[in-house]
Length: 205
Image 1 (cartoon, rainbow, N blue to C red):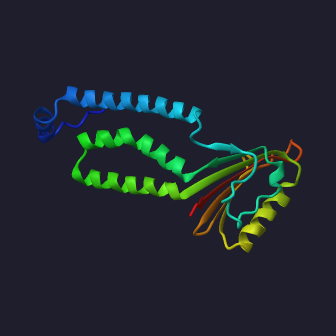
Image 2 (cartoon, rainbow, N blue to C red):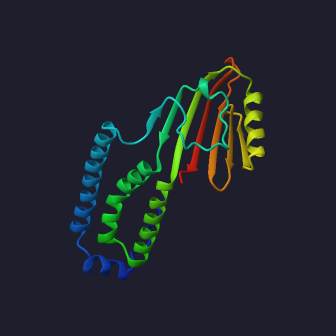
């Protein structure tokens, strides 16, 4: 049996008839999409010219001393994303939404947009380093306990999650100035630890 749709309230129909014409709404929406695509192309071009994440041979000089990465010399990749690049990226992504918001949203939503802008501006104070290891020649328990002991010694708050389906341990260690996410995947049919990923967010000031 078909489900009857509720009747449209009279004030909604009146608002549609007396409000902004549908074709204007459509045009504004299409404009946002087009501008977003153009900006994404521009950002990709800028990335090819040297902006964005940087692949390094060693940890950046401002990497926090309280995070001791186990056998960093065996890492297969080190990627550094400075806060200044994050700030530009987020500002870039949010720009079309802000433009759309100025046309369409209410005063209350404008206040929310300003709050988002403030959050985006704070990203420039946080650098991120992502380090990855593959086919790591060690026991899972050795790697996990090595990091847990180090986090406890340096005053981190620790949360641990185990996903048996993917054979992955996730550790989130945080303190006021640093946040570390550690992921260890160790499948039973592969010798050593399959992969280790450590993502470190830290204040760059």
